[in-house]
Length: 432
Image 1 (cartoon, rainbow, N blue to C red):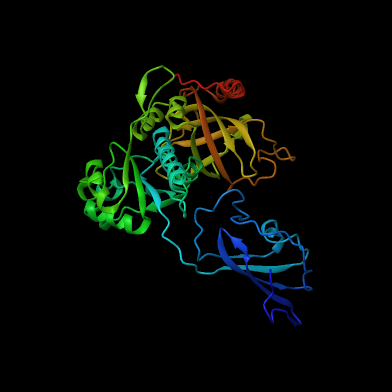
Image 2: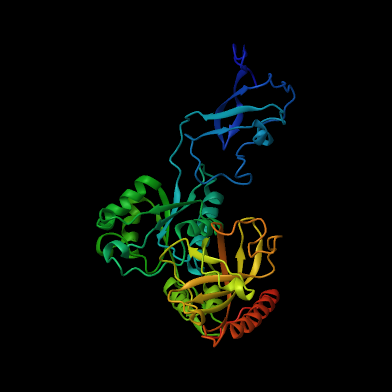
């Protein structure tokens, strides 16, 4: 790599040096590198290894889905990026990478559109089909840029705009959907806010706008896909538009699976909500492909559990319209902010034994190290205000009003023991 003339300019603040050259690439885009040393001039490495293309510190094994040629990155320590640019340099300085505009062809995409609430097995099959299309496109044409899988997610539900108050409780927040969709194969997840103007677009105009923005080579949808004003657009119309806009349409059949009772059901978000409303979290997990998950924040409760030896975390859900399982006691696992996961016996309900009037979500976290002072706080965490994620595994029993706190305590001992056994054995049962 050659240094341009006049690149070294010494000053009281240090040395500023600009390096340019075709050898340096970030995500396959030519860039210029500028660093300013705050101590002394970094040593020159005459035999430095060649740069590795397509590497980024947050995405060491793949191209970041959000990256474009116009992105700039500023990193406070050069050593964070040295694995793909230079050998380690032990000087504190700022590195700025500036991508230079280069002529590019608009990146093609494979589109799939919907609410994706729950990101269940049916949604996973849509992404699996999209990945097959992507692999075939790469194998057949060897074209660049590679088509990206783009998932357009309506959030909130269009029903919230069309018929306010009629929308179902959500199974997942947009953050959760983004996480799961990316895990299952999406390269990009983009939120579509269902405004009145968007929902009133004619179907043909809606597709034309998507084609202008995303340049799709394919659409992947289920048989019940609807779009545009009055939900007039369907797969038949989408196929009619395919020739004009030069994309293909791929229909994915509904996914069917057997529950714990061996009854065959079609996987859908509606079915999952119904199972949760019945307390059948183990069956819901089969349709989801993973345990049902709820995230929230630990807030102050009435602190009655600690008085009988069962301190609980009073959880306020991240989404106020989150779908909650039926009232009862569950075997669950909880993720703490430090990354550790613990078993839990969790109660959802009004707590009738102590005269409660509103529903709460309260896991008793099993085996978590408590504060050295002997208090109810978990070691290393404040008493309140920390995030928690709950994974529901099995229904244990219905909500019951006990005659006294001692009877409640004895039952809680049995609940904890059963939850511990089920989770240790990896067994989930739904018996409501």
